[in-house]
Image 1 (cartoon, rainbow, N blue to C red):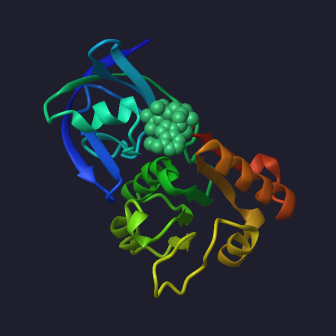
Image 2 (image 1 turned 120 degrees about the vertical axis):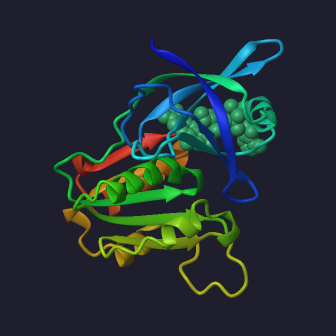
Image 3 (image 1 turned 30 degrees about the vertical axis):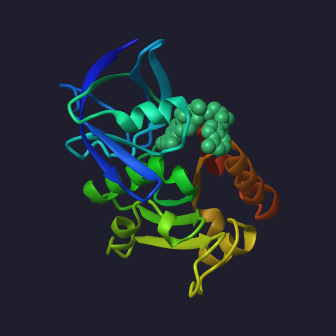
Length: 232
Ligand SMILES: Cc1cc2nc3c(=O)[nH]c(=O)nc-3n(C[C@H](O)[C@H](O)[C@H](O)COP(=O)(O)OP(=O)(O)OC[C@H]3O[C@@H](n4cnc5c(N)ncnc54)[C@H](O)[C@@H]3O)c2cc1C
């Protein structure tokens, strides 16, 4: 199994709860947008503890990055304490949550932290100037919880559109409310069956959205790709 030691170079607060961790890529390091990898961080008793993370960076960027919600789990507490310059071990780049050459119309459907693998793909599409039409359906609790909000909302190409839905919006929000549902999906995406659908996030959310797509909106199962953040 290939593995590498990489130095933490930056921590970026995306929201008050969500942080990105950046590392220098090892020489010759290769991955595809939307893939995931194993991250081992030093731990006193166990030696190291491991979690899987999707890349939130794109291979077109000069760093590798993952992004997570900081909770009070043993892994996240240690992760959040790492200082810049600390080495962590990464290994086993894997996964198939990547836009393929022949896919020209895509929808990413993400709840909360599920944005990571989508952001990796979207950044790759923009940097490689690919002719891919992308719609992002993005569900969050409220506006302050939207990771990569500014970056995504400032994408100014016609071939990218973003639609938000909030489950517990702040006062003044006049957009769609609730969890991602059939009405939100079908009112945002008019050419439902022309597109390839990418759903990423916690398994419960992925399962529920996949059921809506295939059973309610009659999208063929072969057009739906999923990445389950098992453990979330
Ligand atoms: C392919 C893949 C890609 C992934 N990509 C990402 C990613 O990009 N970003 C990301 O953040 N995670 C990602 N994950 C999930 C990640 O590996 C962790 O499992 C997740 O972040 C939870 O870690 P934890 O340390 O908070 O909880 P753990 O301590 O590992 O949690 C163990 C269990 O307790 C529950 N739990 C822990 N704390 C809480 C809490 N405060 N409230 C409620 N339940 C709790 C968890 O749901 C889990 O069932 C990915 C997983 C896979 C398999």
